[in-house]
Image (tube, rainbow, N blue to C red):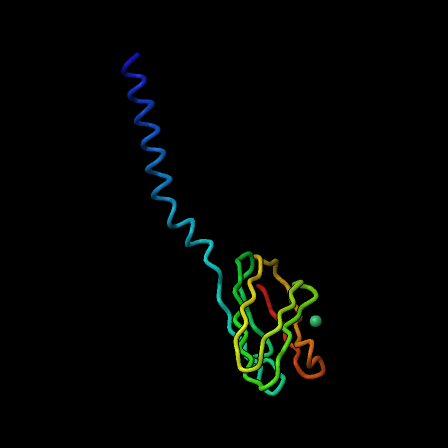
Length: 118
Ligand SMILES: [Cu+2]
């Protein structure tokens, strides 16, 4: 029947329009939380950073020292060399609440930090 076909098309159009409207907010929900941490005198500043749980995290690590650093975390499974006087970016998957330790593998004795996810 013609009437049924028309209403099917209308339903499909409405569905497509709904998806279009939903699109941008879905993308916005996936935007990562950005956190900043610096390395100065082979120490993290701040040594403790806080992030929301179940949200992608973008960690910007600024190495202010004149020597390279290696941002590393066993529990987060990341390892990234950051050249002297430059910035490194580490993207983390959404995490469960907890305390995740990290360190500079080149200066483990002083450069220790914790990411607190809550
Ligand atoms: Cu390492």
